[in-house]
Image (cartoon, rainbow over all chains, first blue to last red; front, side, top):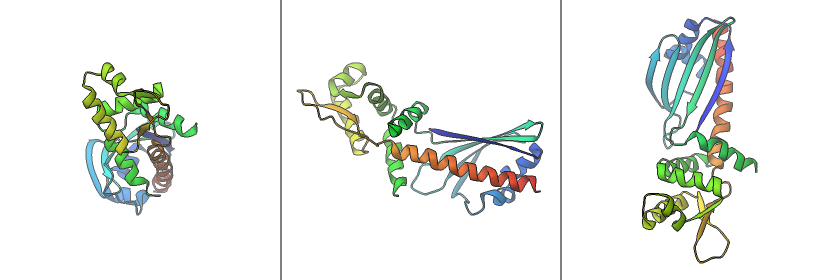
Length: 100
Length: 108
């Protein structure tokens, strides 16, 4: 089960990286959402960052993958957050069930 | 709300690949039974029944109403809703975070 979102930002990938990969940078946009657990799995400056976090003690940690791609305007940021216990094939099916 | 515990128990039940397979079978077939699953999977009826009991405990399956000699199981309506609400909540959360990321980075 995973969620994918993206946005284009008028800033260089290096600046976006600083906002994602450093604690001071994250504070500016995560604000009071400081997660309880962060384990950094991948750090490929300035294009790919993967961390695990848990935003509530009784929920299994989820994996957040952030990709920074250079585009004409500056950077495209793609985020995929996954809860690994839940297979992707379930995603469509569970949504269909809820709609039905 | 109370959704977080529900999500946790759904995740826990589905952490097992055999049980995920059973739920996927139910999504496709609608109902199933211990004998059907046991003939499709490399395991005993007893093992199948144990997995179904775990899914039942997590609130994912229930006994189907249709009367017959063999008990049939189906997905409990709305059982996967906590998982779907996790998706919606997470999408909305990231939309907000990415907007703030954009503002803070472009303003820098």
